[in-house]
Image (spheres, rainbow, N blue to C red):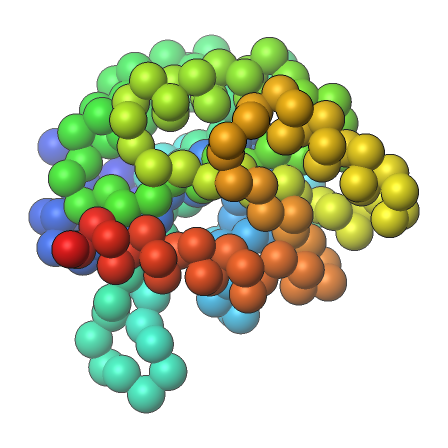
Length: 192
Ligand SMILES: Nc1nc2c(ncn2[C@@H]2O[C@H](COP(=O)(O)OP(=O)(O)OP(=O)(O)O)[C@@H](O)[C@H]2O)c(=O)[nH]1
Ligand SMILES: [Mg+2]
């Protein structure tokens, strides 16, 4: 894993990348660990744990070379995150999202347990404006009953029509296969 908190330290863009974005504590590091089946990304109940962009190499079973990079971005929009972290947004996250040539897919994580927040809206608008392909990952779906989950997903899709929404639980593995399919499809079409 390598880590960068300013644009001049990003690794050379050699492999397709998938970025994980969302408010602090939404479950970014947990989704990465769930997809990879190992605890590579640090998770914490203290918001604001991830302070730089962390680049994780992803290997397919039986293949020695990495095929893909997952990037774990710092969370934002949480009151307890220091001013310092917020001020770093423009200095390295913005250039990453706008300029990174190998960025194949952005995953916008939204906690499906809470009504869509202003900062979620801002992220989704930012991604729409950037022209980057993105998918919404509705995290912590295990915390809701079937009916509650359906209502909550429906509210999300009304708010963000035409955007693919994948319900996900790092705890139960719900959504893992579907999210992998989205990632593979985006990587293939990025390469084409
Ligand atoms: N029930 C449940 N809890 C989850 C799930 N995913 C994450 N959590 C919990 O949510 C908290 C935050 O998870 P992280 O993965 O560290 O969140 P993050 O978005 O990486 O947070 P920052 O790095 O601080 O921005 C932890 O206490 C996790 O255990 C999930 O699918 N289900
Ligand atoms: Mg994190």
